[in-house]
Image 1 (cartoon, rainbow, N blue to C red):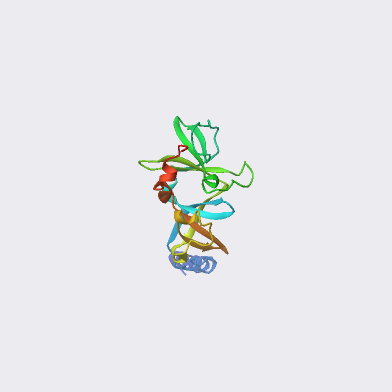
Image 2 (cartoon, rainbow, N blue to C red; image 1 turned 90 degrees about the vertical axis):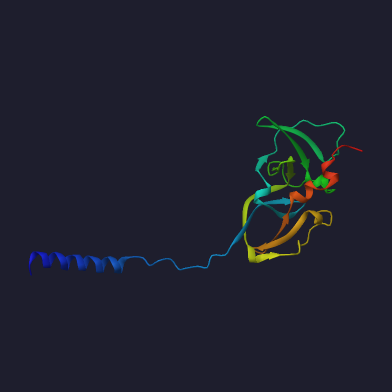
Length: 180
């Protein structure tokens, strides 16, 4: 066998050993479209806010109480030089925030007409749900919250109701927070 034939045989042998030791391609999985939102807990119920309707999540910042407002208006906070009104969502719905103070968070809503912070019991971060798991009914939520919801998702045995801050922003009672 000539040197060139030996070199070629070595390359063929190397290629065969490489193929036998190589890992196979990962199994092809059907990709399902997902809906994403920010998961949170309020009044013992799980909710998800559409991702585009929350601009950020914060720990509850120091705030100043305001006179002459509804009891569910907790005050106003200075967040990076902007005044953020803080609303206790449980109090708005006639209940109280639960859980420890360290778990409570603020969901910041920012639209062209609204910049507000919604205080909730706990935030779970980003949640992803297969869109084919969407259910038209909101699930077992309190009747006072129902007008602000739009369907739900079932995930890992838990129901996540879609909470729509846009519906809240259209409520005259929420918009006019002055004490009557």
